[in-house]
Amino acid sequence: MSNFQCLLKYVFARLAVTLLFVSCSSNADLPSTSLYVIEADGNNRAIILSDPEQRYWGPAWSPDGTKLVFSISTRSGGELYIANVDGSELTQLTNNGRSNYLPAWSPSGQVISFISQESTDTSTSEIYAIHADGSNEVRLTDNDAWEYGTSWSKDGTKIIFGSQRNGDWQIYTMDPDGNHQLPLPNPAHGNAPVWSPDGLRIAFTSDQDGDDDIWVMNADGSDQQNLTDNDVWDDQPQWSPDGTQIAFTSDRDGTANIFVMNSDGSNPRNLTHDVSLEEGIPVWSPDSNRLIFHAAIQTK
Image (cartoon, rainbow, N blue to C red; front, side, top):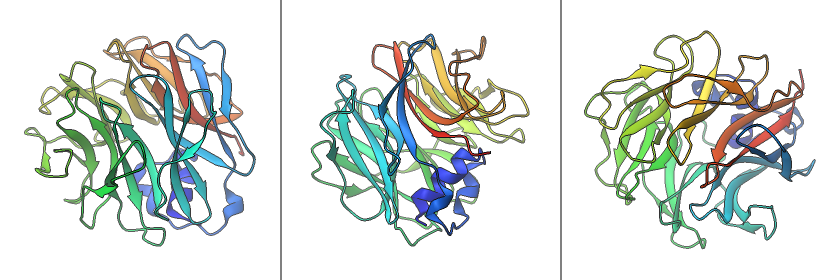
């Protein structure tokens, strides 16, 4: 089984990112996954793409609101695809034979960053970027560590990401061409970082208090605050485009569902309330009115 499929399996099992290194042996272990859309108030959930033979995973909405980019996994890896927001006009973006996941659009909509692994390598993942038309794929990081999650600054001049290159997960920034890879001035333990729309704050996942929680901090790493200080699993924060809310995945109600809270951590609420699904990676539409996410049928 590919590393990308292992990633799927352990995300659905609601384990920490560091457990994604475990090797898997059977393609039959994994359920199919579908892409869903739901209104920001939790109403009118609908399936965008679903196929029992496919695994759609980790969607991202284009800045102009017209396109989605996401992974489709196979036995050999996972390639990135682009489609209209209704799932039509599906077009393959990458064709490199690796496991490619967690895409993120640049503010201009012209470039997409993503995480990538060689299908036989369980020891490292790297960050790549590719033009939205499928041209000019470039490697941005090159080390023997894991990278997880990328987010572009508002002006498009920086990419923020999580890396294990010094042993523990830390938040780093770099230029869009991969130069100047540096930890934040105030070290931040975590991964899956995402800039707030105004560029002044960063939300991220961290287990520094013993379990995965959603944290926020200033853009330089100062004033770190735990917004979901509890004993359950909270992961993959995403700011709403108006900056007032943060969506995330949590298993606090028994299975991985999509939650939304105010940007100060108040008023967390479960949008999906579905014990039959394992859901993950919610992403807002540019107008803050809808979210997309992937989900698999609960197999417990």
